[in-house]
Length: 130
Image: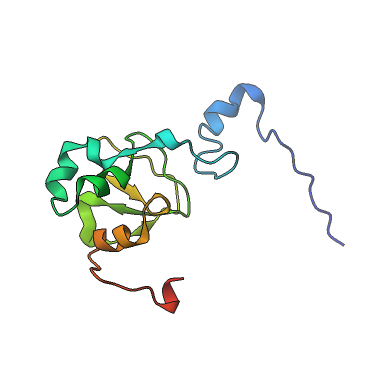
């Protein structure tokens, strides 16, 4: 018969906790969802007007970009406007945006606009994308 060890909430002595585990909860998706101010309108970023001249002002106002220095949500899907050829990617570990990143979260983007950003013009949803 095996006995399970009881979980202890404090794994390390308090005086060593910050040294032994400096980012204890980094990358965890618990608690309230990210506030809306983690993103900003693409319309407000001059470089996006240059990168995406085919988008209208209304589309740029609807498109959200993650603010620099914000942590990306684990298991969420994103698109890097600076590297659209890479395609969409899912964050599986800790990732914080850098000042020059132009990261678009899929969950804040209309699917038709998302497909256009991915280069899928006129694409229709198939059973495998649901």
